[in-house]
Amino acid sequence: MVPVTAPYVAGFLAFREVPVLVEAVQRLQQEEPQLQPQVLLVDGNGLLHPREFGIACHLGVLTDLPCIGVAKNLLHVDGLVRDELHKEQVRSLQRSGEAFPLTGTSGKVLGMVLRSHSNSSRPLYVSVGHRVSLGTAVSLVRACCRFRIPEPIRQADIRSREYLRRQPCAPVEGLEAVPASPESKKEDESED
Image (cartoon, rainbow, N blue to C red; front, side, top):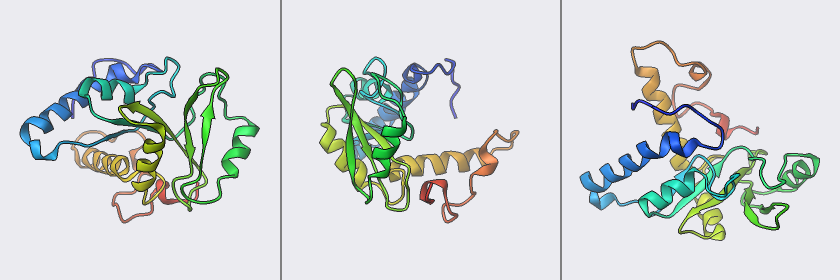
């Protein structure tokens, strides 16, 4: 548990969370140097961001580690919207591992839409953070998906929610809807 000093402001998540994440990476490097991360998966965006520099870019640059942004929802930037055309393209992803590029009105490819698991119709939005190509980012995310969400992000979410459940403080809003054990059926494992 760490105190958060900055408020949540859409598009500025890095300023709220990256200092704590950088400190965690540095502490790991000092205390367990044999556990040097080869790549970081971030629950957020990289280049798929209004300033083309989301939380995955910030964390990657500050740690100098390869970093990949993995978002659950499409960030509306550079003309990208979740309209009927986008929804139809998502529906066209029939099998696990299928993907299509997110090209903005500028002509830049900002990321990829990935169907990460055959049992989920909801895609992931993968974008480059730092020191990794988009193709490699998609391949790594694909390889980490036992369910919809890549396992490192999924396990971090499960463990943090479990930790909060065990705390003797007032319940945190929204946690009661999350199953208590990893064996329980998770939202990330369901069809939608």
